[in-house]
Image (tube, rainbow, N blue to C red; front, top):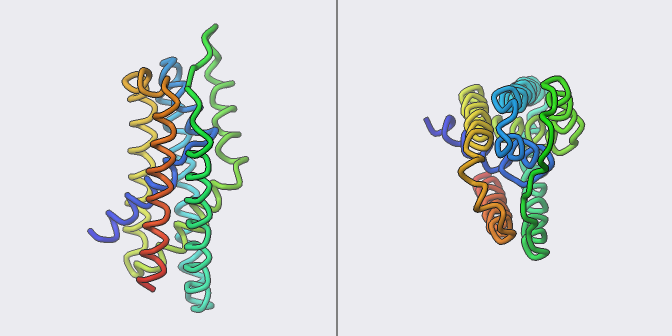
Length: 200
């Protein structure tokens, strides 16, 4: 259960950071257009990348045990920088989310957009393949339980973001809501980094 919950909450903290993909999912949820397909595209993409990261790191750690420690500290350094960037974004202030109104975009075009936002984003590989792959090695031989938790976290996040967006519309029209979210994500990044460093 420790590995499962660790995977779940680590994945949540990583993908909750404001970015183009999440903003797009939120906009689709606010507009109530193709929400199920957008959520599935994001969550299934994450599942594939998380599985690749966990599988790759399991094999790599067997061949070169030192790589686990190296990637642990590299992952912690990445989290520290990533958290700092979130605090920097909070200091700059937020932007109100006002989705564009107009004609309904086709499902094909919508899926193309969300897949490009997902797979063309270099951070998605750092978050899922590299970082979650490295952290999962700390839970061996339960690394696949960690992966299951991480995948569940991804599905939970995108489902809540897409289908819960209509409830958040008044809140995220206020730029200060984005500021608070950035600060929460930044703090979470630093807490995870500290846990990795001091738990090594």
